[in-house]
Amino acid sequence: MISQPQDAAGFLSERLHISKSSAGLLCLRGISTLEQAEHFLTPKLADLPDPLLFKDMDRAVTLICEAMRQQWPIVVYGDYDVDGICATSLLVHFLKTLEITVKWHVPNRLTDGYGLTSSGIRTVGKMVETPALLITVDNGISAIKEVEEAIAAGFHVIVTDHHEPQGRVPAADAVINPKQDDCGFPFSGLSGVGVAFFLIVSLRSKCIENGYWKVENAPNLKKYLDLVALGTVADVMPLVDVNRILVRAGIEVLSKRSRPGIWALCEEAGMREGGITSEDISFRLAPRINAAGRMGTPEIAARLLMAEDISTAQPAAVELEEKNKARREIERTIVEAAVVQCEKQCAQGAHALVVYQGDWHPGVLGIVASRICDRFHLPAIALADDRNSLNIRGSGRSACGVDLFTVVENCREWLHHFGGHEQAIGLTMAKNHLDKFIDALNSQVGEFLTQGKKDDEAVIIDQKLNGEEATPSFVSFLRHLEPCGNENPEPVFLVENTKLVRTSIVKKEHLRFALHLGDTVYQGIAFGMGKKISIVQDRVDVAFTIKHSNFRGRKRVEVMAVAIRPTR
Image 1 (cartoon, one colour):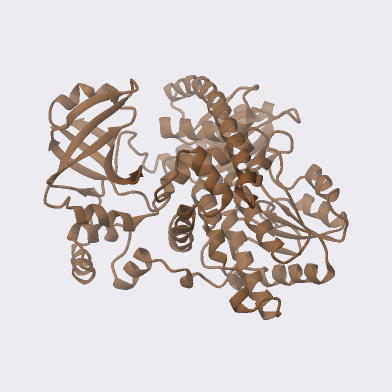
Image 2 (tube, one colour):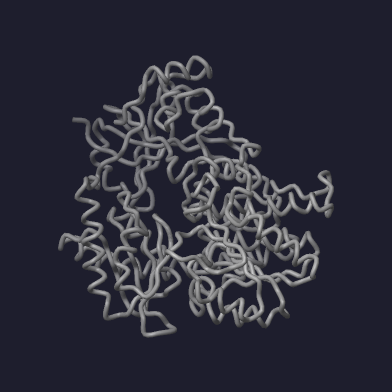
């Protein structure tokens, strides 16, 4: 159990008029002063940093204004995942308010590959006459050669990205990326759509300064924050600091479902009412948007989010739902085969899991890596043959706190290309380098894990609860901790020596139960723990999170078990 500074908890409890248990949860998040508590509990858009703190932001905005004056067409070059599609949709929609000719392109994962490519430049070159302005979103930071090609083809180029720079950056007219060493922006954890949002914030200010708009009739940029929340949560960015402000406000916008594409998407996902949470984004909305890119049709998702009316959005949402069903079936088959490889590697003492089969569908490799990472609690990379070359390529996901970008970077001698961030990477290599890469990766991850490998069965408990602490006001206070996710996880509670009641098995693998907390009985679910039905006949210790939901207009509070063990 994590210790908490009792003096700070007492101080916050008294000054904020909350329970000691509630204050303790704030302290566990490094909050010990009233100012810190205010920023965390009531994040304000007014507290966002100045976009001009980004390196090259002023140059980028000046160039866009020049494009307006010269009537150059603008092409937004995006990416095929949720973050990239949201960033593309956001920037295209805003630029259209400036009465500029705006085109967009999202590459096909299966045929084009990731990011700005030579073939992609040829494609966008056919869309517009040059001179023109090319703006990348959620990609471009490693496209050294490709930016040179775009410039040679007659484009001015602005790169906006959030992935890790790999030494030299492209010689674009402007490069906006908070991870550049000499960037003055105070927060480096933005998503691609987050970076794009700050670009339009700065551009809006410049347009007001230049007299294009008056303050009172300039667009209200809060309406774009639903896209920022979607992309930020889907890309597993840290939900702290600037991202907490953006996502908290963005979820408020998202929950109104005012964007036609969001309304249609929620209809297909069975989310017709109630507030939307970060968990809803991760497990219900993002997979559907991602399905388009995974199946080689990212333009469906882009059309959905750019739709101006329901009649356009609804067919796209229906098509996405079909793509998602197909994706799930392909994924299920591949995961089954990948698990067999992982079990063999674990038996041999692997520190990282690398699975490969030539004919696996490249569109689901990232989610396969995520599934086996979650199952085996080790960093995982899933690979298949590259359909466009003799190489193999794939995606990786992190576990155990491993900085996957850094460990893969230390194995770069065996790779053609790689990119990403701490939690997720993409990579390409020659097939005959696979074994050497696996050895190097295991060595690198092994060095990290020897510093203190996590127990696979360990669960970090935020608080033990008893009947007196689990009051309705305490349960209600938990809503103020949202949005939860990376670096702001849901609190995990522990109740010891309790008796679960009304236990049953659901769908042959999940355990349904009821748990007494104080004077209230909460319905509970333990996913994948159906086999524990025998041990819960006696007294047990239960670690769980508390979930708030809205079903058919009724607000409900349930518990979700993350671990159950017999009381010792």
